[in-house]
Image 1: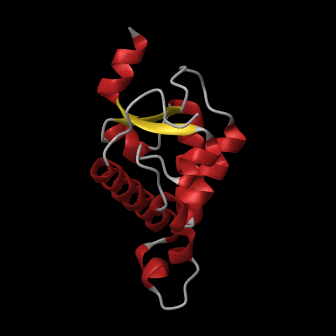
Image 2: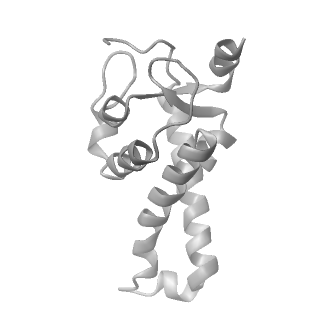
Length: 135
């Protein structure tokens, strides 16, 4: 398939969603390990934000259709064919690992789907677009 069945969300909203997720994951790590451990030079606590982000976003994308940041900014992840169904959990995890690698989302097609979405067979859409699919 050369293009997704539905229009994809803007990159601006996706970046805001990523910032929300990263902030939430950072706060979670600080709550668990403490601010002192997080800010200490050479501390492993600050390095835990990335794996916490990957797990949070993969788990919520699989179970709820999007990470906390995506859902709070009105975005969700669906199969690229537009058929509404739960994503495969392995594909959701691989998708988020690719996002964590940074480069795959930056390599994208004209339709707005990055390598992470292409590999996982997903599209990131707005709630408004989702409502049109539910009708």
